[in-house]
Length: 88
Image 1 (tube, rainbow, N blue to C red):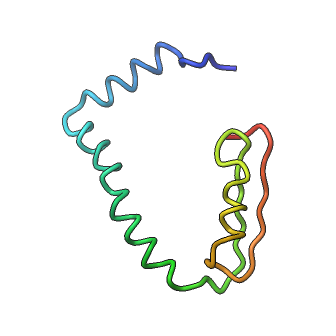
Image 2 (cartoon, rainbow, N blue to C red):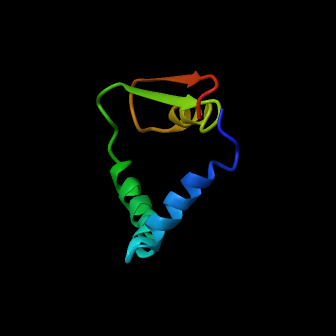
């Protein structure tokens, strides 16, 4: 099992990658795109999916939230969910 803080070599690799020209701007642009994604998903959610949907969440991440979200959303006619233990 890896330490919570990661290895020094990992930190050095990330620091070197982000120090390259344009990398920080590209990293922040990812978060800026969330606003457009929210608008896009709002528009897409007006149409229900015609195929079954499977939502899988891990204990250490979304857990049962994805299944709960499917239960109250009008996104699809048929859905099922699963929570995977010890995964995140």
